[in-house]
Image (tube, rainbow, N blue to C red; front, side, top):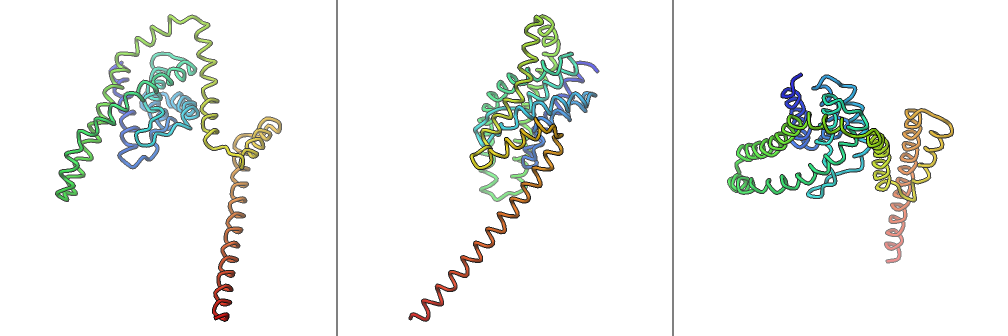
Length: 267
């Protein structure tokens, strides 16, 4: 596959996953596990795409962009990591480590595109004032295509011009640096999970974290078995909470009825 074709395939994967995610109401096809799979499929190495996408999903699992508050841009990081791993001969560890700075750089550029969306504000206002539904659809599609196509062009340039540069750069690195990258890549997944746990873990559910650790570490249960046990426990707790809630509502309703009857007879 020529360098031009590689750049086109990577750009197409980026445009489909990132642009399509926001066209269809944030359907989560921008997540690294999906982006890596699509990129690997387009470049002819689905296995590598799934592996790198899964590893990056663990890193970016706790990264959620809300409104103008952006913490990371995992789509470009995943596309470029998978592309260079397949075409430039990078190892899995090197590709995963490369994803972090790429994500940070493109996250900074994302703020520029957020500001560029203001260019279409007068057009939106004009069609809304007229009550033109079809016109609004045209403006939405035009702004969507313009924003995400220009972003995809940058991916194209980075892949087309950067493949040989990345190969040359990585070939000049000493073995100690390569080993350090491999160690860092192994730690990044743990860092991503730690960020997610910081958001989710509370004093009420931290005990279940240690239960899962014991099941995995000391009883050597497979992850799928632990997941099934977790689902059963969660369903049991949920059903129990529902019964308690229904019982409280029933008791509250009875109390209100009795109070109204007592007030009626007291009058």
